[in-house]
Length: 385
Image (cartoon, rainbow, N blue to C red):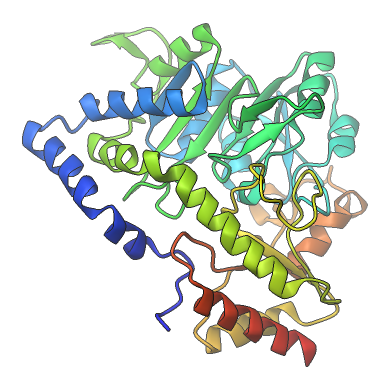
């Protein structure tokens, strides 16, 4: 059996080596390293893939979130509601802009932001909601957009983990993740479903005026060289990273399908185990249905109940099986974001999840032998602990 990786970027590269190398070599030979043709080609191709009017490439996913908030004109003191159970970048940019983060609990099945908690958190100072499409599945965007419309709020989709997923509303209408809110951000960090070979990110919007503002912000506030019309930052996707992404984009659906297939095999192995809860899809279909497009499994995350999750992590590592705990500490308990406004009774789900979740290897190169070994190792440990 080949060595198990949490993310096998080397194996993925081997399959597309020639086209990636040729694309990078083209950039090197024409020396258009910043804002070159490859950036514009990738931008256009990603717009077509998503069915969105505007993609604005930038330097990384965290910048994308910050630029989205800048572009919407949010001001110090404005409240922004987001999920407590996620990576810190989401709340980090809120604090950096002197906005007021308002953390709320998540749904125990999908791990995405809890709709009722959002409703309770709204005050006259609330200006935006940031749902995180956690682990590769869309939050309840239909409900969130209805709340936003009722209260005149912006919705900023954090799509760093969800690119390629589709959201189906109550009418059966589908939309790509990141194209439903007023604006969305994504990350092209190497381990993402669509990842480059360094840092990269982008914003998506269907709003022409907002797109114009965002394009200025990412480039020092310039639309014309040395004419600074808005306060901006230096956040550009470099051409070599765009070349890598453009080479990978045609394979994204295949990559996501491979992840779903691996998730099905995991689910089958763990099915009906009394101590293991497998990932739930938003449509609550049995397992992961054959036509599933709502989850792209950036992570495959179990809940381990009535067993020792931390001891399982150590055991898997001893057996050469990498794993991750995403996330071990709720944001409301992080030193940087402590606030007397937060009450523990409002974070019951998150406080439980951080004790139970474990993410197993998930990538496009997983094979049956590896999955069999991983699942058997997990089950054997949980059965005896």
